Image (tube, rainbow, N blue to C red; front, side):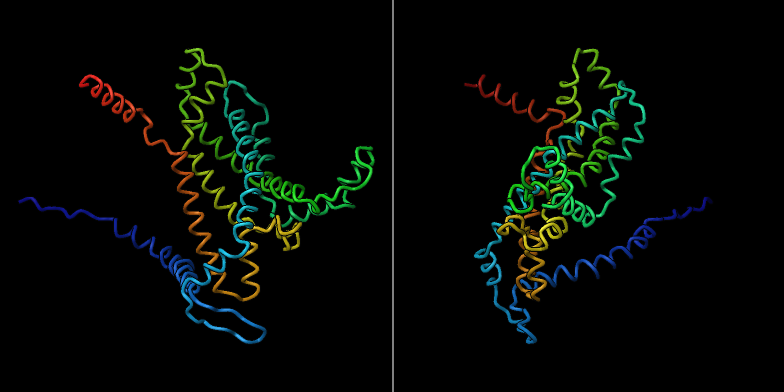
Length: 319
């Protein structure tokens, strides 16, 4: 008689190995997140040495936030994110296409990749302190411009709305375009060379190859880049905080949502801070969903479009 051999199942080991992750996530992420949502429905703050609450007040914290300058700070955050993200994605795409093009045979490619990625390794606080020193009224930028005779008096870069927002956006661009370039370069290098060779045989030029082959093929990475950039933009804090000394000057036009949240945490107003955190979660979820829908191609092979055309043709024949 043949004896049946019992198969060895290794599936349970996978579950055992991921238990530590779920435990850490539950303790350090899930519980604080649920607690934050709970506090958003309570009046809980410190007044001097006296602690008020927690007293359940429903959605009053959310109403107070909508009546505050939260919308203005959201607009500030959006503007500074756009100033940094638009040149970041454009230059990253150009550099990635350039470095990933095998036909160019660029010398010292590894060196240039390292140089491009280096700003990403510098702390945001160090970047902010450097720019604060460089663009101050007595800084080297004003000194150089005056010595060249281009300006007669120092420019107060951080005293104007355009100057402050431009500096914040420029710093975010410098810190993150290297990381974006490396990711997009990896995505382009993952495209089969046969596709590019076929396009050359069909007479496609470099612009047509970029817009009709490269961009559609790297759409998933573009979606990932856009979503992570949106989340990072909503979390913008350290650069404007240090550059404006936490005040969001001039006239709070560089105050971001996280700086607003930090002001509530400083005043021990946990109820308002919790409500603002919930608002941030909802806003980031909506923006990420919209970004995913815009960049995601639900019909990559064109089968759905072909089916729709057939249905239209059949309807016309019936009529």
